[in-house]
Image (cartoon, rainbow, N blue to C red; front, side, top):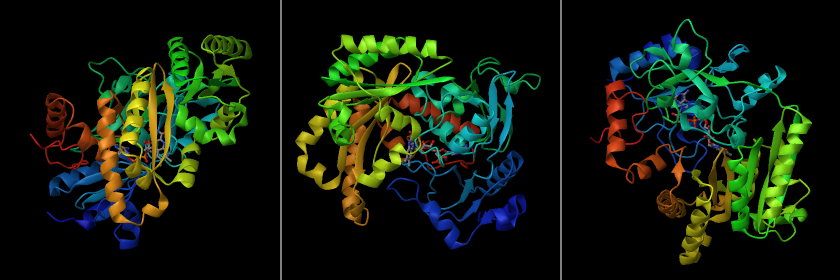
Length: 472
Ligand SMILES: Cc1cc2nc3c(=O)[nH]c(=O)nc-3n(C[C@H](O)[C@H](O)[C@H](O)COP(=O)(O)OP(=O)(O)OC[C@H]3O[C@@H](n4cnc5c(N)ncnc54)[C@H](O)[C@@H]3O)c2cc1C
């Protein structure tokens, strides 16, 4: 059935229903190189009730809905395919409650990380994990939907590790709560209980199973002491061995970055203090007081010395801490559009990924040079494991040339397959990585997702283009 424009306008009001061509065009792209189709219209709801009414109406008329936060992802998960409605959540951008009894904060999903961090800081709190590198615009609902990782990950893990519960509108329009908050008599203080963990179904689901309309996260008091460390190593192997021991100590370091040889030599001209180092480990320690922080720092220094590492004057680590939401934008300005595919590996496993990447480039040197600016692997610790970003940039001058883009896309797709085969686990998989991933892992796993999707979303309404869930 066609789009009943008047019905949707009534739900959100004319002001928040966009149908003019000029208003729709920006929604064709996300932050990556891939393009979707123009939506038939964009709806911008102002409450969970409106989201529910939109979804119920879409079910009646079998209208596909694509969910979008800030649209800052790279892999096409927030793009429309074949038209339909685009449900844009950035009007839902309030901080609902800081609850000091349950140590939690409840926010609406369209709030940006930068805005939430500023508000919470003013109240003396933070959420541990404090957002992806795109956090100036990226929304909390978007990050929860792709299991984002970055600021604070060494100590606190991924955004999912901070989540205590959601309010979610399901694909047929019912509104539910997950976590302890599902008990109407209880506060949002724990994730597990009341049977299986239903919050987990919506973390990293890319909106396939529901629309998040509230996100509850842990809240921590601001640290009273912050210190920085920076170490130079004679080899990547020594650096990785030190990182393994550091991570095993379950440290206070909130951020620990690892730069392998290529990335180190790319960034070295800006950091004379690195002087001949082949690999860099840098980061920050946030502690409740100076004494705790200094003890932690001494433990790290000792681990590093035993691996032949040098203690450097912190410079890069301070820059990172002050620019958590800027670091990746600078990379784009200098090199082009990132065709990355962040993935997680065990700490030692990073050496396998680096080796595989080098061998691939050695086998295809001309192809690689012609299509990419490659700067190496930028990696960081996520509690006990590693997240790595292969920095494969599509030079800006190629952006205008469709055939070059096609070749680059093919090489990127091959690379994603290879990273998966190296044991890499992707998280912002969107449409593009989703298609590769589900062709490579056991069918039974994909089939369970498909059966869940069909049970929850029989009319194929929410993000129906993702992950080929109707192939069975
Ligand atoms: C410069 C740059 C740096 C980046 N750095 C990082 C990084 O450090 N770590 C990282 O993890 N990612 C990073 N990203 C990727 C991306 O920005 C993040 O993953 C971000 O969390 C996506 O949030 P968003 O609001 O833009 O979501 P969108 O791109 O709008 O949506 C992402 C997915 O979530 C779904 N979705 C969005 N909101 C909801 C909701 N409320 N309910 C249900 N489904 C929803 C969408 O349908 C889509 O499938 C970066 C991107 C850029 C451009």
